[in-house]
Length: 245
Image 1 (tube, one colour):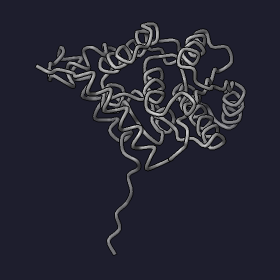
Image 2 (cartoon, rainbow, N blue to C red):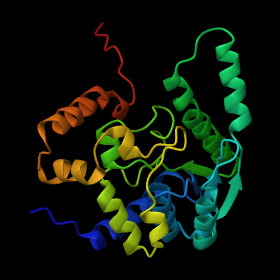
Image 3 (cartoon, rainbow, N blue to C red):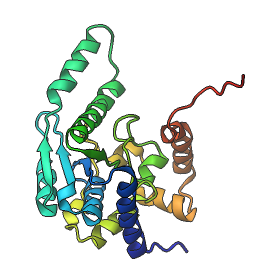
């Protein structure tokens, strides 16, 4: 039976972040987008534990009016980290309008564009604040491709990429984060649906399949396997032609 050692995992990850910065950005700050959900909350808390609150910067990026932005504000206050709010709405609208003026823009393009604008914003803040960008994706999301390529799927270092959703929640609780930040239903902030609504299965089901090999019903297993297969390219940097001269 699979047993997750939350103490070992948490302390190991904190030490890894500390060592990563020693090699790849001594005295640099950790910069990340703050959504108020479990992933960004846990990554922020891990970085504070590793580097101290003065070296962690949160970037809040509403697209116009964001109904749950109070979560992001409260998390930054709870951790005591510096934060900046950048409204990405005008930039997203301007790019969307320019594309729509020349071609029909698909719904998927509309959904993914804000994530890419947000990541460009996080990198702009990081380069202006002596920072390195933290990726906040977890193993469960990466497994089925629930991320936007060159949006939330990228970063300079990734503390949670080998932890499932259930494990991320356990780490957040171990770090002492209030339950509201680790148990908040994940919503993409783009179309109003929860992650699980869009995926068609629960993260608990997915996590058991990944970690323990417990297969869900045949239809769900087929969907998970299909999503995993077609989204593997997102986990690679870039496919390149290997020329042998």
